[in-house]
Length: 218
Image (cartoon, rainbow, N blue to C red; front, side, top):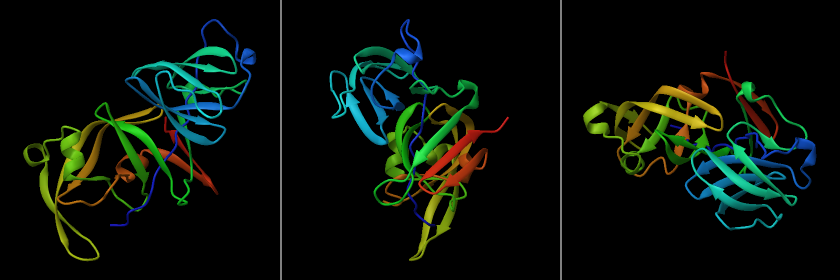
């Protein structure tokens, strides 16, 4: 199995009684929402902010949960939900589009969630399914030995024991898919959860140099 590296997602920030043209400052995208933390893409740089923390670009996180984040951007307080960016150039929430840039290792990586729990993904279009190791599965509460079907995966060095499972939900940005196939490998590999074609194959994928765009099919 080829182990590739994965994704950055873009999402629109709504505002508290303000028009988008009132926002000054850097181009900001929320790329992940968790309890008291948010992952934000600021002028192309990914930052993990905790409540009360200010990024080097001057973006401050006031509060965050799994539904929204409140930030100060360019001196303006805005509320962000998983449907766009802080900018005068707003994309349609209905598009359900995620943009991912290559990381320093020239691989696509991002944060998302499996069954509502935060996950760091690596994009792997060569993997037929989402793939994770057994420790990652246990952290996500996946009882693969009970609910999964035993199988085997041939790697470059040996045959690995594995189990096929079905994930209730997999979310990247505003794209949330249900009943997604995955495989759990016994052992330390892969060291990061791979976002394979059981998720990606249900989306439109456009790759333009340093940028990968995922769009929900309708």
